[in-house]
Structures are given as C-alpha cells and as structure tokens.
Length: 227
Ligand code: OAD
Image (cartoon, rainbow, N blue to C red):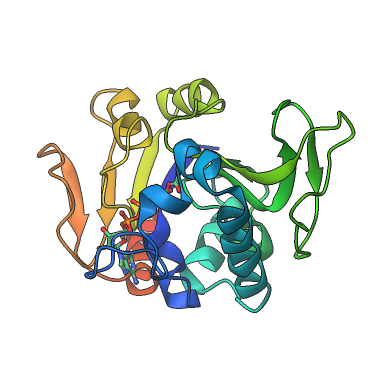
C-alpha cells in the first residue's frame, strides 16, 4: 500500500463547530492565544487556563467528526494512512482513523505539571483546579503550549519523509515547527493543500484546492483514486 500522510489543523474541525485559532478578531474563544496557550500564560494564571480547557473539553463532547474526518478514515481501505494533527480534539479518532499523531497534545488527557511522562485519560471530565497527579504535582491539561517542546516532532518528521502522498488541510501554517513539516517530504511526491483562504505561502509544487475541508476532501479523494 502507498503511504498517505495528512497534516491537519484547526480548519478541518471548523465544520464540526470548533473555532479556528486565528479567526478574524484575532482571539481564540474570546481569549488572547498567549494567555491560554503558552507556558507563561499557565504560570501567570493556571486557574484561568485550566478553566479554559475544561470548557473546550465540554464543548468537544458535543462535536461530531465531519465528512472530511470521515473520508480520511475511509481512505485506510486503500492507503497506509497517517494523520499528523495540530488539533487537540479527538475527531480523527472518532471518525475511525487508527494512526493519529497529536503534535500539540490532546484535550481528553491530563498530565502532571512536573512530569510530562505521566499522562492519563480523562475523557470529557473537568480537571478540578488543585487536583494532583500521583507525583504530588498539579494535574494540568495535556496540551503542548507555546514555549514548550513538541515531543512527537521527530516521529512526525519520519512519517512525512516516508510519505508517497502528502495532504495539508486547514492550517494557516503560522506555527512552527509543525508548519515546516511538509519540507521533509521526498522531492517530487504529490502534495495538496486544502484551505478556503490564503495561508502562508507554500512552494509552487503544492497543488492548492481552495475549498472547505469537506468539499476539498471529496475532490481530493477522486484525484487520489484516479492517480
Ligand atoms: P489557524 O487558526 O491558524 O488556521 C486555521 C486555518 O483553517 C486557516 O488557514 C483557515 O483559512 C482554515 N479554515 C477555516 N475554515 C476551514 C474549513 N471549513 N475547511 C478547511 N480550512 C478551513 O489554525 P492552525 O494552523 O491549526 O497551537 O493553528 C496552529 C496552532 O496554533 C494550533 O495547533 C494551536 C494554535 O495556537 C497550540 O495551541 C499550541
């Protein structure tokens, strides 16, 4: 089977009702990104940040995958599929994708403030501020914030390096290191980008499908099957 790698961002979940990060007002759910998605923001006001992710988790419990997530999962019948996502939602898994790399963490997990090695599934429940991990340190959302390392980056790079096809969907390509991942693709492999809006520039070999994720994935599926 040929290897098909997806690099997804917030835009793929937009049609499932989850806001993207860089909406026109520059805020994420009425908060400045640096207040709720950086390690400095956590140190400044951990209670606010904890509460913010509790709300996102509750919101996620009411969201369903859309046709784009579903087509990606179905393509496992034809390709060896890996999804590398910057999203912290679980919609790829819920759609049935079996190999998902979450570069920026997962909303349905918590970890110790001290020991990022301690990770536990919490589903959609709230983290009560002050709750402790087994090591005695605060339990915090399992999110990779700005200012923190991206532990799965090397794994993601090797996945991209071995891809026969690469598809980028719904990311503004503003946030590194994730935004640079597509440069690791073997020279000459087909690369598509699906986004209804302008993103950061990509090289001229990338084929752009200027559509929302659901329509774009429908178009792409036909192109892949015909290839
Ligand atoms: P952004 O909010 O920066 O970009 C979302 C992209 O999705 C934009 O290019 C939109 O044009 C596009 N978009 C909007 N609606 C769409 C639709 N229906 N179908 C397809 N695309 C659509 O989100 P990301 O690039 O994912 O990190 O942001 C990257 C990281 O920045 C996030 O993972 C997060 C954030 O701060 C952390 O929280 C650490």
